[in-house]
Length: 370
Image (cartoon, rainbow, N blue to C red; front, side, top):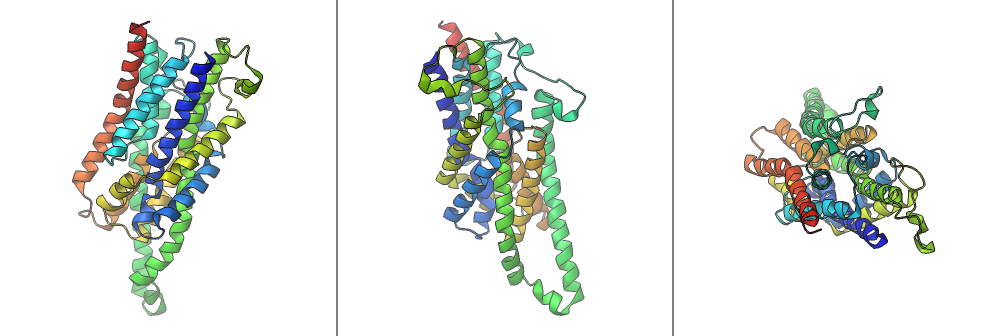
C-alpha cells in the first residue's frame, strides 16, 4: 500500500510538471508575443514568480482536498487517485499536442470527480454539489467552487480586458487631444517603449497569480491521498525514511513539504515552456502590442488572485484567453479570429467530461477485474 501511495505522489508531481509547461505557457504567452521578452527570459520570470505564488497560500489546495468529494461516502484509494491523475494528464497532453490552451485545472477536477463517481458505483451523492456556510468563503462544492467560477471567470476576463484596454485608449486619446509635449509622448514608438517596461511588471503579476491558483491543485490531491491513507491505517507502520508522509493535521491541512515540493516542480515544468500554446494565444487570436499584453495580463492576474482568495480553482487558461479576447475586441472588434476562438471554446467545453470520462473508465475497469 505504501508503494501505491508513493505512486500517487509521483503521478501528482508528473501532473504538476506538465501543468508547468502547459498552463504556464498561457501566463507568459502575451509577453513573448509582444517581443518584450525572449521565450527564455519569459520562462525564467514565470518560473520565479510561479514559485513565490505557489508558496503564498493554500485555499485552493483545501478546496481540492476536501471540498469536492465526500470522503465519508466513497473510499478515495490510491488506485482511484492514480486514475484521476492519469485521466487529467492524458487530456492535458492531447490538448498540448494540438496546441489548444485547455484548462489543467478543469482536467484535474474532471479526473477527480470521474474517478470518485466510478469508485462510488455511480452514486452522484459522492460529489459535493453545494454546501453553504455562514461565511461565503466557506461555501464548498462543485456549484460554488467550479461551475459558477467556470462561467463567471471567462466573462470577467473578457469584460475586464475591455475595460482596462478601453481606459488606456481613452487616456492616450485625451493626451493626444491636448497636443504639445503630451501628444508627442503618446506616439506609437513611445507607447511601445513605456508599456514594454510596464509589461515586465504585469507579466510577473500574472506568473505570481498563476502560482497562487494552479500549483495548489496538486497540493490538494497529495494532501487528500495522505489523509485517506492515514485514515485507512496505511501509515501506521511507516519506515523511518517515510515518516514525513504522516499528515501533521486533518484533511484540510496542507503540510509544508507538500507546498514546497509542488511549487518547485511547477517551476521546473515552467522552465520547459509550451511554445505551441504560446503561438495559439499570442499570435493566432489577435495581434498584440505591449499595451495590449499589459492590459490582458493585468486583467487575468486580478481574476486569478481574487479566485485564489476564495479558494476557487479557476482556469488560468480561461482568464488569460478571454482577457486577450477582450483586449482585442476593445482594440478592433473585427481583429479577433473567430475560428481559433471556436476551437479554444470547444476545448473548454470538453475538458471536464473528457478527463472525467477517462478517469471513470479506468476506475470502472479496475473494479471489473477485482
